[in-house]
Amino acid sequence: MGLAQTEDVSPNLSHPSNNSLLVNNTNSSILTTSFLYDISTAIGASGNAGVVFVNNEFWVSAWASNNIHLLDSSGAFSSTFQVAGLTGTRSMTTDGTYVYCGTAGSTIYRVNPVTKVVVNTIAVSSSVTARFCTYDPTLDGGNGGFWIANFNTDIASISMTGTQLSLIPAATHGLTGMYGAAVYNNNGNHYLFVYHQGGANNDQITVLNLTTGLQTGDTYDFFVNDSQPAGSTSSLAGGMFLSSSVVSGQDTLIGVSQATPNNLLFGMNLDTVLATDSFKSSNFVVYPNPATDYLSFSTKNNVKIKQLRVVDVLGQLVIDKPNFTHSKIDISNLNSGIYFVSLFDENNQSQTIKVIKK
Image 1 (cartoon, rainbow, N blue to C red):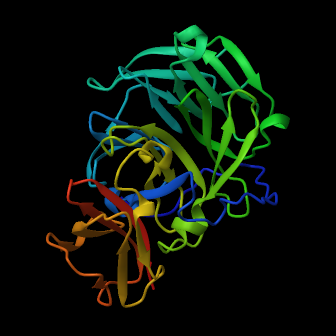
Image 2: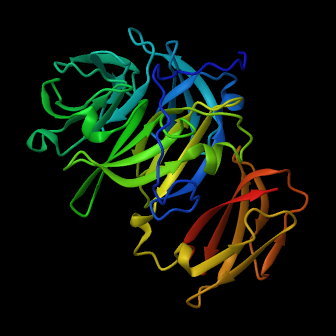
Image 3: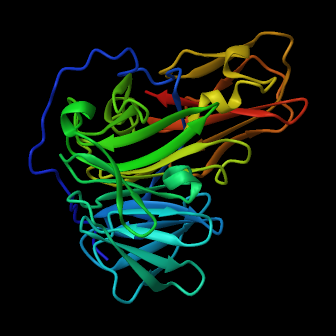
């Protein structure tokens, strides 16, 4: 398969100014990068968009064909399959039993993840079509449903049978180029993380309050923080999914960036989930970042680091220090790019930090 880049682009990209404190902030109070995989190289093809994590593997869909690619939890490609009657999948979500696929149309496809067969279709009664489709168990009085939208449309909630339940007007949410989304319920708060082709770089995550339909002010520019440092010349938002299974004990936002020259599969940790851990990012400092020759470490609150591991964007282990007792490591032999440094304490709790090697 060739690596020719194909992107699914909003026809009306806009570039509004954005004064959010989280823009260009790599380690924001909301999101920190957990993993970043070059999936164009792994799969052997670009044009990837939708993503879901089910049965301990990633499903990544090609938006312009009927291909769905399987990758293991470390981002390694295993195989490609097709689902009869399903093509052009832009988004995928799950209720824990079935996978539901949105194709930017008025039909949602229910797929058995074991047999990989369409077992039912849901006709959407709303005028809003399902480019993104994300499951919400709280909708329809706890019977479950979906939030759906297309590039520049209103955002609708629908029942499991496709009946429209509510609508967030485009003028209220203020987003353009919407592609992926994921619902996040936390301590009684109801949020929608929207991955959209807005902002200055067309590759942005913005948080909506689903109670009001308004933006919270939290925005993350994936191109500036992740895609560009990884070598991308441009990128576009793709599909998104939220999982607590990829990284044990953590809610992780998973997304596909339609980056050039290579599509990227990423995971973002929601820091609020880690707030009760004894081993938090506030307990240590990694510096300088970006770095050229050495990375130095300091700790707080009597935390002791016992192990250090460094992996690259392909998931390859490049440094492993099982009995780490020093205050710095030599990274001068590493190629320029993004790396993930995982630190483990004496209780085997870990924290991963993204670093940039110049």
